[in-house]
Structures are given as structure tokens and as C-alpha cells.
Image (tube, rainbow, N blue to C red; front, side, top):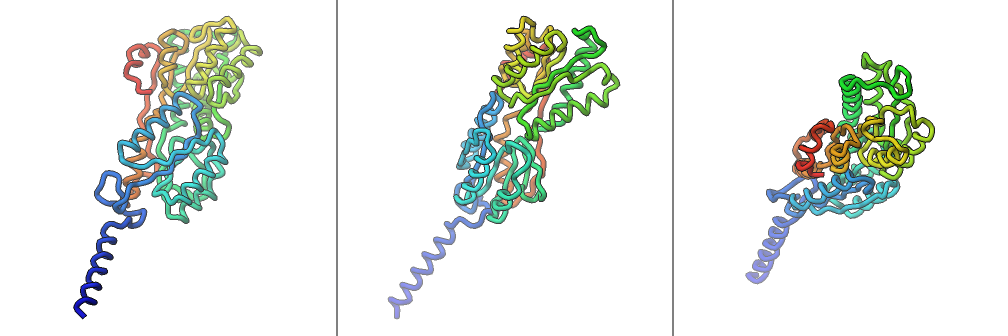
Length: 341
């Protein structure tokens, strides 16, 4: 009887010990820097690709922040295809990761796969771009930038600059002719920047001074930006006054096209773009671009902090924006050494 009681006591002690070291559920967290019920947090992260300097900086920020936070990152590059992102998210669900984060290539088409994540009790964070869903409870938080305000800031700067510099339309008309290099068709960031720009122009007392001559996607890439700018110049070489590029990489490609056409970028054509990468600061220092509106890619630390809070059961804001600024050419030389991307 004593032997039986001893054996039972030993078994009970083993069960208790196993329970103390167990994982718990996804909504609880231990006291460690990146623990979730005593085990390391695993995050599935789907990035859209590597189409620009900005996107590379965004990816590096996420990877570095995960490492510093002690979070295991399952990283997937979608190579600009939504179907690849959906496959990646389903793979994360099958693996049983603790939390999923993704940068949506386009706004729509996410309801089904995010419902699958919710059914699996895996919280989702949307990063950088926006999504349109029938049910906003399918994601817990969105971290990123305000593309609508970025577009508005572009027109505000243009109007102030053209007035201050006493610029005159090149085509001999009363209107400045604007060409626009748009981002990826259907992406929230392209939609927001275009809407913000147009809304601010329509609301301006100087709206009649501006006309959008042409607007076409450059797919957020330098090569495509150059190709589309070449087509703009073939049609309206001596009319274009202003180029608004939805990102810096397209602007840098357009600068090559403008120079090849025998014009001076930054002088014959005023150039403003969005992102704030080092390449455009160098172009401004060389007098080939005029302004960049910042879109901050360094979102990794905020993402990891938010993920931990969610897994700890803490309340988080539905929308978290990172700080951004506006950088004209006259501050480029001073600012470039301080840039982290």
C-alpha cells in the first residue's frame, strides 16, 4: 500500500510540474519579454514584396524589431501577388502561430481568410495599408501611415511653393499642368494619396490654377515610373509643370526620363513625391527634385509592442499612426545624414 501511495504521489507531482511549464492559451502571457503562457511568441508576417527602398526599410524594421523583442518571426514575401498572401496567412493558421500581421497588397478580398484566422482564435494586425471588410472585428489593430493626409500635404506644399517662387505655366496657359504617377491599382495607399491630393486641390482657393493633365500607375517601381514618365513626355513634353509621384522610387525613375528628354528635373518640372527615402534626399541635394512628404516605414517596434499587448489581453487602439513630416529641398543636405532609411 505504501508503494502504491508513493507512486500515486510521484505521478501527481509530475502532472503539477507539467502544468506549471505548459503553454496556456494565445490570449495569455507570462512575465518574459516575449512569452505567451511560458513559450516564445510566434508571429506570422506577410510582406507584399520588395518593390522600393521604402519597402526594404519597412521589412528590415519588422525583422529587427522582432529579433530585439524576442519574437519568432515567420516571414513570407508575397512578390506583389494577393493570392500568395492568402496562402501565407492560411499557412500561418495551420502552423498555429500566436499572432498574424500582414501588409495588404490591395484593400479588398480578405474577408474569408481573416474569418478563418478569427475562427482559429489567432489575432490579426494590419500593417501599413488599409483593408475594406464587411466585419472590422476580423482584425484587432491597424498600424501604419495616413495616406489621405500625405496626399493633402503634397498639394498644400505645391500651392505654397508655386506661389512663393512666382512660377508660371510652361505651356503659356493660365493653368499649371500636373502629371501623376500613381501607385499599385487598388491599393489603399494609392487610393488615399490620390484622394487626399484631389480633395485638397478642389478645396483650395487656387484650384483653378491647376489641371491634372495625365494620371497613370507606375506600380510603385522605379522602372515603371521611368516608362510612364517617358510616355507623358512624348505627348506633352513642353506642357508639364509639376510631377506628383505616389512614391520616391517612381520619382527617381521619372527624373531619368526627364533628363533623357533634355529637360531639367526640379527646374523645368517641379517634382514632389512621397516616402522620404535617402535616394530622393540625394536627388534634392543635386537640384533634381523639390520635396518629399514622409511616409515612415519604421513600423516594426510599434508592431511588436502592439502584438505583445494583444497577447497579454491588454486593450489597444484600433488605428495607430506613426509620426511623419514634410521635407523640401532646402533642408535635404542637413537632413540626409539623420535619415535611417
